[in-house]
Length: 579
Image (cartoon, rainbow, N blue to C red):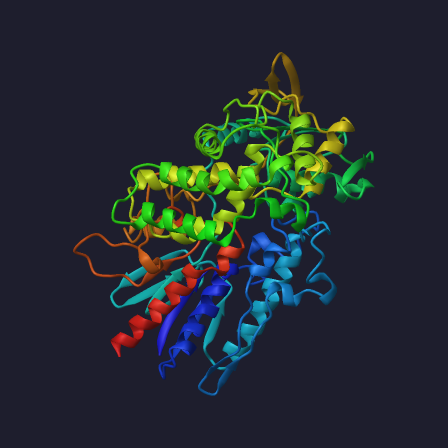
């Protein structure tokens, strides 16, 4: 009986467990396996990001319509053991929520709802596997992993698990070394009486419980999704509410209370807001490439990443994306901003824009526009009440092409520097592709109109530590704030990770970074690459910490994607060949 360890029992760990037994079932082996799963969180399957008990004001940034692609688990029979099926996310929903009309606004569920689904899916699987003696769950964190062929030993603070023959690392967000800026602020707060600093964006419950009063002026280091969750936590969870005054556009009025801070001051390096996704399927159809266009795009990406003539820079991706965008943009005709460009001209303008997001052109929203007006313009496009700019169009088309990029760019053969360039392009797209629902942006607009959200400092202000907190200065405007909330999530940059198991694996030279800005170097099927001349080590890394070897590491759908399946099938094949 082969002994596996899965370290990390969030969504990826759940799917790794499912995939392993599915691969065994599909290969009709008479061999047997057992798994030890390490997961300290009390709701396995969900992980802390999808905690079923978190506040309802933390929303997903993916629609329930898009979650139709989250597959269920079929029933499996292993000898006398029957592992029950579990429905897909959509099938799990109440029937009336499963197939809404295309004109209905898309629903963005609370993260707790997704967490409830994931935990329920895990518990059904775990009950069956434990009942057949195929699964042990250890509710502790692995701090050390050693390998003396052919066995691993996994250590926690209280015990050691030995004779493990294969390990898959499926851990998600990890603590990292504080940036110089955050470290300076932390040192500063230690010397003040009143200032409050949170260096981590989540859980927002800690922020809600802090001594943040109606007199506090709160700054947000970051102008993205985490900031929106933090603002909702500090307003809606303290009695405030939004009133919908237009159902078609989700336009809102903010009704505050005396229990929450009266001034929020967000800022970021570029000051640009997140961009809302189309409000419903009917609007979203404008941005959906045809199957033929996606097929051609996939071939171009695969050729550049893994073909005979590997790309030497990121332009292969820009050209492939522009080839999808140009005919599609011309095809929407008067639903786009007025122009007289040819398809070829749109093609080259798209490449130039993707290479330089601050490009000035009549088809692109100007970065000189005020943030409030920019959000209003983008909402109008998202609800189908304004002609679409080329930058909004490209961002939404990128979202539809993203699963193809993630699939075709897995374990690329091109140079590491080019991989880093491609990942930087995808990260830059996330203002659009990972954008929030229209309602989230309407909340920010309503807060700005109510005088609660101060957007005067949003574009990279000068920040100085002062006696009572921090002073922000921008264009001769100054404000002193006493609460600083970090709303930037750490990138999966291996060299900055500050957790024991990763430091242990680096120290033992069992892993190495793909690039100084990226995660662990892995080869095909997710196994860590070993130096030439050294023996294969049965250690696989799936998910966030393998960024660079793969791209799609932050999306919930990618947790249930083909790379985990390919690892499990390869692992079972290796076991079959050993027999």
